[in-house]
Length: 289
Image (cartoon, rainbow, N blue to C red; front, top):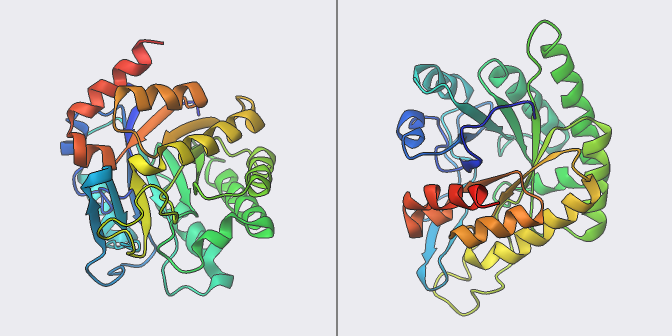
């Protein structure tokens, strides 16, 4: 992506949705941070309770729904941070934006965050905003990437070109993966995050909270996320930077993502169960290559 990372282990989006804790999180040893998801307008997200632990399987289910303070307050927080490392900003659409105007929200987000981001992630894979995942499909992903790659060219005409990254779901069918890979190459998208949370409940059946709506993360989705990562690696052939995310709770899990084609990895649920020591443990997986 044309970026220099202090190390290849990053924080996934969703933990610091409002970019309020950049300096503190950077002190944990991450090589890069991704903040957001931020939407053009502030919104409260889905009703509480909306976050559930399944400790027997080192998993979480969340249906937060892009709760955030909106672009203006979010960017004020980014400007206050002292940390100067690689900062990804993850953008999405407001829940009340009509589906036919969803791409307008992404364009507004891209234009606003562009001066402040090292890279910009397009989140089209959260299961917690109704209709959002349709943006991964067929004509929709084509329209989204065509519009935003054009906006990026406009924004970079008088300055530095910022990488665009697409974050995808772990629940994609093979044909959907192939279509997304084709669109990513055609529109010059520099990075792809595999993956977001899953709507599957495989591996947590019968547990307390397993029936809650939302996205499943943590150990139970590791294999599912790695399978999608490996398929994209095969189709993209090193032409796009791959970021492995989903089910990383140990050094061995990070090594599995590397073997599947990841150049970088991101943590979230693993931090809840393993603590910040997981960061340096995963950095050691890359040093051992």
